[in-house]
Structure formats: C-alpha cells, structure tokens
Length: 210
Image 1 (cartoon, rainbow, N blue to C red):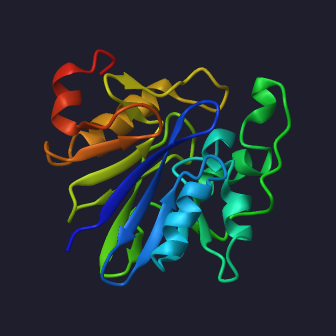
Image 2: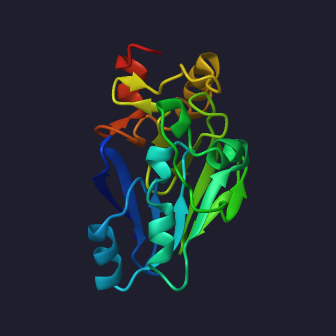
Image 3: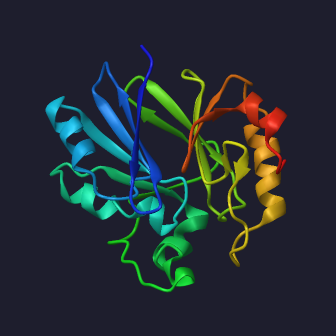
C-alpha cells in the first residue's frame, strides 16, 4: 500500500505543508510545518495517526513556523529533523533577521541528518538527498516506492529557489537540481514548498532557469 500525501497551504507566504500517512501502521509525518494548523491536527487525532516526524527541508522561518506548536500538541512529541548544515540558520531565527524581524524557533531540532540517511515511516522509507543552494543544508525527502520527492524551495513548477541571500549558492542550487533531482525517474512527482506540484520530466523540458 502506498503512502497517502495530503497538501495544506498555510501561512502568509502560502507555504505547502505536507501530511504523509503510512496507512498500515498509521504513522505520519509532516513536511515543513510552516504554521499551526488545526485542520492537520484534527485529521491526525480523528483517525488515530501517530505523528512521528516533523521533516524540515530547510530552516527558513516560513518552513518551520509550526514546529514548536505541533510538538506541544502531543505527549509523545514528534521528532523534528533537519540537516546539520542548516543548524546555524535555524539557531539564528530561520533567516528572519534578513527580512527585518525576530523569530523564535522554540529550541533545537531533535535529530540532525546527513546525505543518504533513510527515515523509516511504518513500512516505507524516505531517503535524504542533500540538495544545497537555496540554503546550505537544504534536503529533499525522496520516496522511491511512491515516485515522490518533497523538494522544499529547491525547485518549483517552472521555477527555482532564491539564491540572493548571503548563505545561498546559485551554482550549488543548479548543481543540486541537475545531479540529484534530474537523475530521479522522469515520472517522479515533485512536491515543492510553494505552488503546484510538477514532475521531473516537466522541469527537465520546460524549466527556463535550468
């Protein structure tokens, strides 16, 4: 049985937050909890899911704004997971100072991950692809079984992530897309941090930035 993937558009910047459900074990993960969401919380509680992880593609404030809130909703707190290269960005407020305000992340991540680690969600496995460029520790969570990649702000439908911050790297972002995303099967669905989903083939053929 495949994973169930649900999309919720949250927050003032209209971030995509994803609820991933493994239906056999009833375990779940939230990818990029950008803001508190009663809708997601009620979906989890009503169906008796166990929220195991908060998976963070990168440490920008608009992708982690709901981490503290989600953790406080459960006695068995979900583990927040971040790549180690984004820990400094997380600790400094998720880049909020760059936009002129302060943001409290609510503590450190529970688990730091690296390239090629696997995250087990019930009977399924998500692979960690380190895809820096937008931020140093940006990752993509990839499910081979579901032909799905949660790619944060690396690549969008006919677009790419910003690289005008001092810690960003335009050449690194393009390299991550070409070497990590475009080597996935063409039918892989890309679930980005903003906007509609797309596929590897669509972006190979029609993304004007690559």
